[in-house]
Image (tube, rainbow, N blue to C red; front, side, top):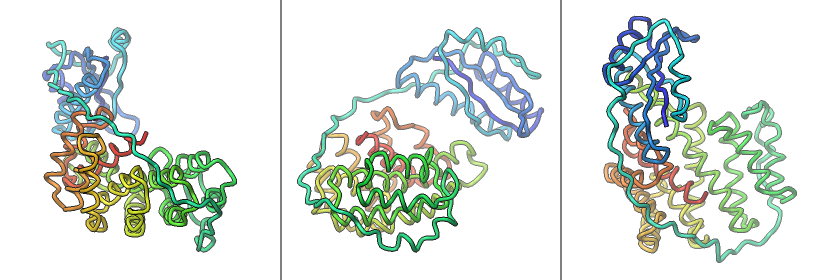
Length: 373
């Protein structure tokens, strides 16, 4: 695997200086040209090769972070890049730009990456289940001014009908949830004006016990994913902005986070009634909102002991540190998890300006979602 590491810097002088420093660092060729949105785009070509596996992915991403340090010293910020097969290197060598700097080295330093063996993943039961199928009346649904709110595709006037379809079981639940959240309210991981308003109705569907456990688990998952968008946006902002700007939450993510937090006490009251697969998600929700979740600490500890030696057990240990406010220990546990969870990104651990607890909670949420997938 090879690639490019792209950065936007303020002007031509910064572009030339950063290109020369990136070439001196080891990139064999660095190009820079005016960026259509202002400033200059600097592209460091990285021939690699990196192995096409988790180690290689983490090596090239670590190289990109090292290059970002150089760009930031010249007022720059990361602007993505590309990853491609080494067979395309010759194609990229034909690129031209107003600024071209060749380095004397074949490649930048290759970071040492160690992947530790992952603990086994336990299949958690969705039984016993006390649900009695039926239709749920969604109290207050028509009191929300949906037509005045927006989601990813415009006016949110269609949201109440989708929620009623969930409540009445008139359409396939997976299909409705994909449309409601995957397409409209959490499209591509973003939050929208109508997102927070829809979330309490998921709680109402859960507590009615009219849906079987597998369907309730899907609702918990969407609440967990929604609540995690604020932390994700903070970590992502810090990754791209660096030390120059304090991290800012994405649009509507703070409101969504607070709304999910408001649901946590009611949902935690269901702990004893829910099967183990849902208790695991409840523990993660509690840790995502430790102000509410601390009262579940003993239950989380008991479940962690029961699942000791499994992936879920490691996540529950992390959750326990977060609900107790032991953020530094939580971040250390998160780093251990990132060492074996290949879908989690090491750069989350280093997000500048983001508190330890938020970085650790982001690892917890994303990792827990992966265990269910």
